[in-house]
Image 1 (cartoon, rainbow, N blue to C red):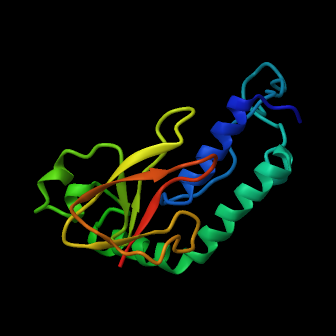
Image 2: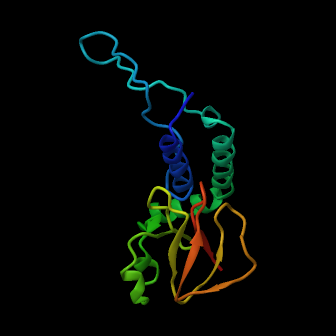
Length: 177
């Protein structure tokens, strides 16, 4: 399968972001569209191209596999979040101010979120973005977590803004410690 660079970036972005969302799916509507069967409606096959993680080349496969395995590692945590959502109505994805209501800066942040109480997620927002600013809320300490392993032994103090590297298929994630 031959994909454009843009298509690959979109696929990888959806994998990295999806890992830290309530539902993690690596499939969907895709080209080429299959023709409709019949003329009376129904029996349509809207998509049909391959969409398994190994269909996009070795580099994409390794990146998507990494996030798939990370999501599996997070399964107990995600179940806990889903139980909280079911029992108490607590959102799985939380605005920064919901988790840190006393931190005024969190009321201004619009491009990062909390995945439950533990993970601060700072999505890559633009094509070609390789660094981004991330606000770490005060009242907590943080460690870089991107791909399921704490990236640095250094604990970062809350109430600060850091510049996070975000090379291809790495989305800045920080674990609350």
